[in-house]
Length: 239
Ligand SMILES: [Zn+2]
Image (cartoon, rainbow, N blue to C red; front, side, top):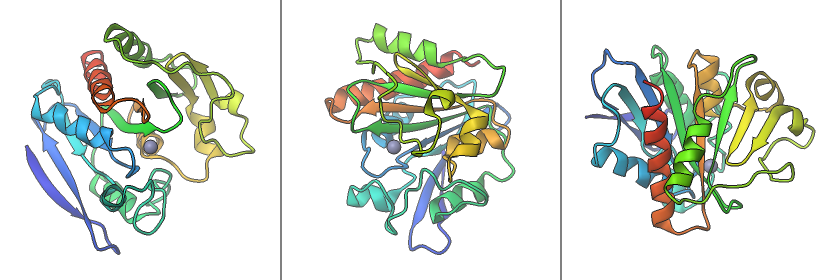
């Protein structure tokens, strides 16, 4: 594993980026800790690397803690009070997003994963954005694997808050099923004022970019396990 420290231009901090595997293999981007108060995601990602659970048919570019100032403070936002998640539009509107977009400039990814936690959820769920005419590829397998592992899966209904802008037509943009949100990629691109890393990567050609959420109120070990199950299931199903 090669670890690099990437400068956040204009901010007094750096980001760690780890690269793993054979550089000629298809590369998977994995990001955790975009929100500083969602700690199971970075720790689960670190455990996946430590335990050798990342499928060796792929190479990896890993950002283990994308918002270190938020993580240290236990806040959703970074030290400047900005939500890093929705800051990947254009060249990036936070120092963290600019660092990632600059580092990724010449890279192609076969797949992207973004690991989060949700304070309001009682179970796990995954966002799978779909280009028009494409069927979901990964989310069904994740839900099945979570069920198989006895982990809680979130029942999603139209009143579940997914944080869309107030004027957005949520029913058109999201198809909600148990444990998964199928996102209309083109609509999401238009409706939100800022792009998350997943949608920004799809915009730059990554075929699939999933965002996985674990329920913050649940026990720590369960949330760690859920991230591990989700990541390993996606990798096993995408070779
Ligand atoms: Zn989050």
